[in-house]
Image 1 (tube, helix red, strand yellow):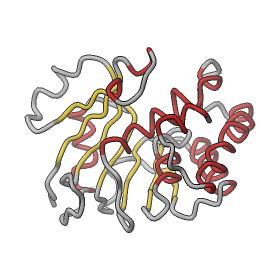
Image 2 (image 1 turned 45 degrees about the vertical axis):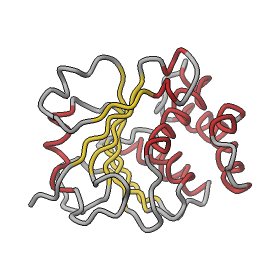
Image 3 (image 1 turned 135 degrees about the vertical axis):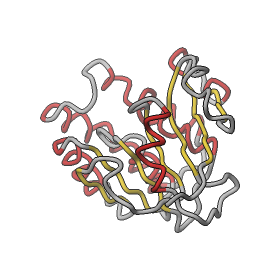
Image 4 (image 1 turned 90 degrees about the vertical axis):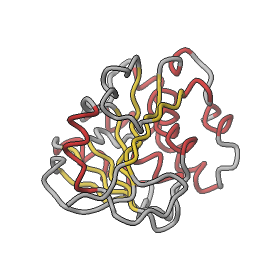
Length: 209
């Protein structure tokens, strides 16, 4: 928990309680359904929770906004972001049912009423969102094909509606066709070796039928 408070010192008492509860919840559920690698569960707060919260360093979601988390796995980045932005609505999808079960159980335990999680495949629904978030589920060209029709027409944030994508390494080739993509180095916001190559990629996308 201390690592979260270092970078997000203004958490409310409710948020602190919810974040502190995550360790026990994930440890318990991960023993039943493996959603986080065994070695990573010991670094849950750094490698999963704080990493997810890197998106919040780039953009603060407004109350009433709608955010889609594609390939959420065990609920990242959706669950940490839903705790941070309790008035923003989050829709978490993954193709693996047992992972969505874990997400729903944890969301219920935390009493997060701003999360809806379902077993669905990206590209199979037409709901529209202000932003689509994800953690490196595929390359950006394929990802954009999946979610292009899910971008809402009206933009209400400082950044135009689009994608906020957590990924690491050299993305030059992958982003070559996206001239408007902006890479934010998480090492500018968080200390530690883990964040040295980690980034948030912001890609504005226009509404498209």
